[in-house]
Length: 229
Image (cartoon, rainbow, N blue to C red; front, side, top):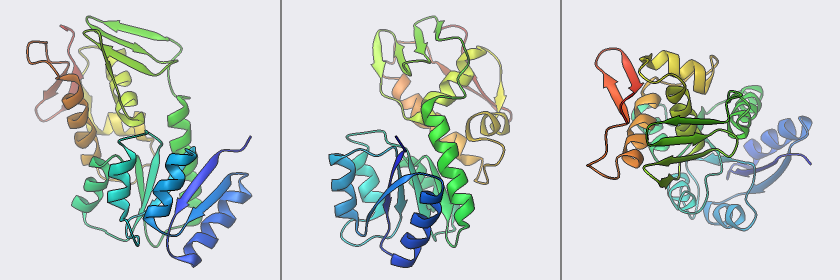
């Protein structure tokens, strides 16, 4: 059965182009022309992926994304005409998995959709199904994470980042290393995206101040997973 993509976009011309290119690739696409309807459709029938415009009537893309993340971790690609780096980082902090700047190439958008779906399906995971480092347990097949017997609810990108670091405890990864391994070499965004997701990971892992810190920053280089957890 083809992947179901939900496009939430109020510009009918953009919607028509996106629909044409995605259906050529055998995706099944539904369209909502405002944020309120889009959120309702996403919650009633969760899609494989959401393509979400930033500026929408009735409910903005950011407001929609914030509400969506209270209920599901469906991957989201944001379409935005905003070119400021902090605007794009704000979208990522709200839970977006990727973004495409308007005006955009439809072929690039299709490539981004395929890349995000591959990440979400875990096709890049290694053959080692369960990693255990101290109190941290990661199951790559079920895509679950437990730390100190607590189950953690991670996004797709947070899981992939943690899994890469956990395969090599103590190894320092630069931002570019993590961008290549998690986002892919064709990712054209800013390297601050790594910092954003590491920060959110830390918030979820550091739920008890008495526990050892799982993630460490190596100043001027990058990040590592502690061997002493």
